[in-house]
Length: 96
Image: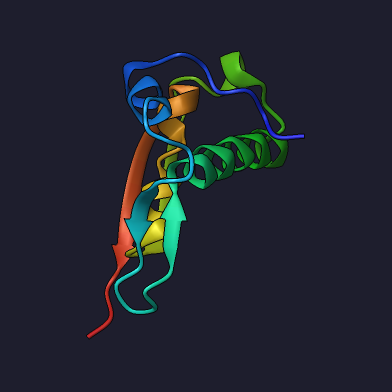
């Protein structure tokens, strides 16, 4: 079961969209991801991050977390730290 998302202006704005409408399109593959899948994947990422750190939401607040991801859907979803109130540094790997 995925972790519940807190109420925030960021996630409330996403929730206002039709869950089946397109949120992100991967440029290289053309694969489209919906707002519903974005919320679901952020919730899962939050749950995984909490499990892997062994912390709960109050224990991880304010922690420094870095993500190294490729540009695309994973980059958009990586900032799930917005949801857990951690300080995130999202780095993009660059391909030439």
